[in-house]
Length: 193
Image 1 (tube, rainbow, N blue to C red):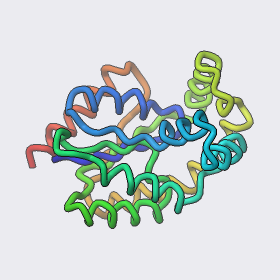
Image 2: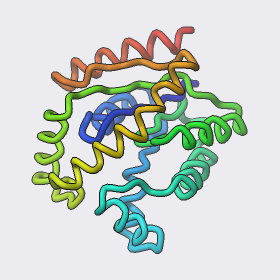
Image 3: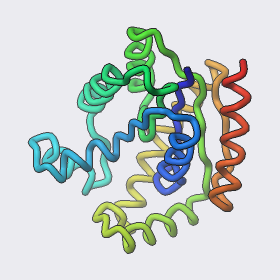
């Protein structure tokens, strides 16, 4: 069983690479962004709270995200070879909570994939995505705020996983298949250990 966290700034290609990993390794994909967008689309109370935060470029409070992830992890069955988390954890506190959640089910994180793309390219990608997908949170002001928040809160997670010796930095510029090839090599290497 292999359990992966895929991390990177907004627009780094986490979702695209996650889809390829899921397809090739039969992992359960847990994307907090997708889960939260579903709540917004459903018009739930949580969805209304999340929409206000996301529109301002802010993060959803740890306790709400941790509850959502804990519930999702508890529902993973044996038909999967593990899981991939996309968009979680985003803070060291969330990473610590994730360790506890997984420990309760006899699981642990196998590898932390950190996709790096320079900021100018990230902004360009997100603006294009906003035009194509019509996502309200992909406007220049919100993008800059999200990147600022990412750098302040999410970057320390890299150090957390470096200490656990399961951190891998991936260069995220280039062709999708080329980037995936690097990721696939790492997953194959780790899964043989």
